[in-house]
Image 1 (cartoon, rainbow, N blue to C red):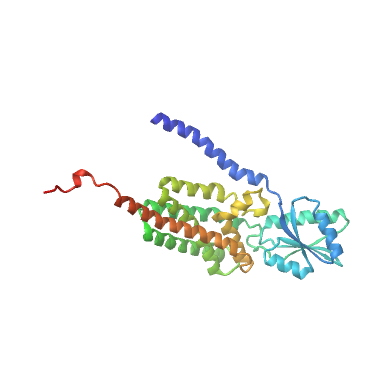
Image 2 (image 1 turned 60 degrees about the vertical axis):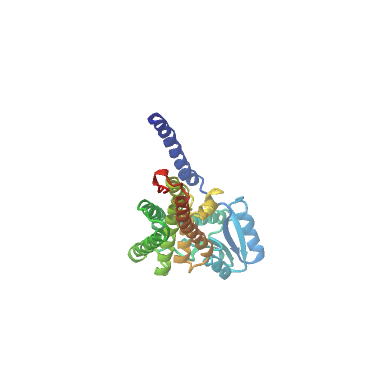
Length: 327
């Protein structure tokens, strides 16, 4: 038995290391625009020419046409596109939103400026929805993904290890997520000033993000024991964080990584937090539903695990020594 355990550790350790390296390093090494939503606005003939130039980068941009600059600005504020090239009588103009992704805003500036320079023109850049001056590169917001995931894993693990079951476990998970959200909002919004939206909405998002992870951890643990706890924690840490697109954008990651990341709590919470904090809740429905489903399914699994365990005890045969003698 000790020899088997030694072999298992010797085999599993490098496999887990390779998996972690692949999950974190591969998306980062393959970061590039893939059908990145970009608007083009202006007179039809001039806009068509700009669109043709952008389409030379095959698969890089998903072009959306708008009638004028106002429509392009509204599309950015609605999170329909990450930026827009506007053709004006004074020359081309690039609208960006560094609050949506500083990395994408910089990429658009470089790509569009290069295209304009090739045709002997200079382009003016306007940041329609700017990132906070205290966090212009979005580093603090990106750094919040891992702590929230860890907080959720810790809460779910503690509920499991302390033996809480059923409704008590559900109450503990919700009760832990709420102060985590408030504390995170207090640090990110009130102290560091890296969030700029409604404080309570941000606290709600941060709390929901924590609950989505903690409920998943506790729920799978309730159904499958330690194996379920490990599966949930491993999924969030090995796939949720590197696939979240927090440092750039989901459309900057190779597929299907970008899509998968938005189905997992870290990716959905990052997208939702940006929408609530900088875009007045635009495009918040999808990630809010994703986090809600994770939370509800996890809490449901916690309750189901309690029921299944109770039924299992009820159907266990009574040992003969415990049977009362028949007179």
